[in-house]
Image (cartoon, rainbow, N blue to C red; front, side):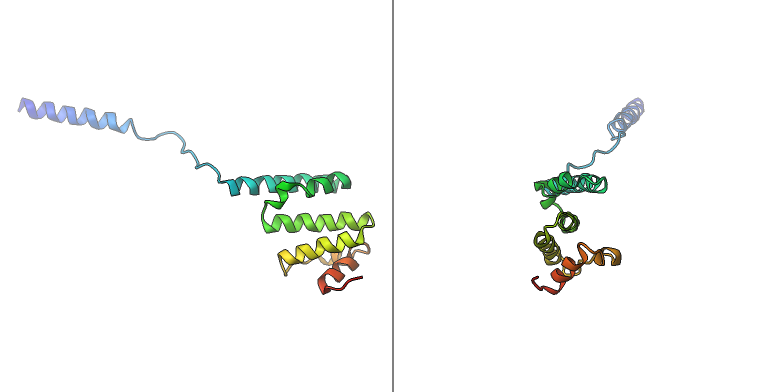
Length: 137
């Protein structure tokens, strides 16, 4: 009888000790893959470039849009970069480069379109239409 009480007590103490071994802290997320890191960097580079673009710093925005990080990102990131590069090229009178940037965006995604306001813009609208139809100017 005494032995069974001792065994019961030991079993109880062991159970209490083992529950202390259970993970109680926050779970740690698995490390990011190289692809996930590249996509995050691309997204951040695009955000930085668009902030420069919105402030009118087109030369700096162009430089950032051409960064290696962006071209390691998703197709969506690349399309946005190409669209804004096209805008920058058109406003700086580099029409052939503008059209080529639109062509590359369309090549990435055949369904790539501009908003109606963007598509009718007097500087890049015509180049976008030429890229869409595949005609050379």
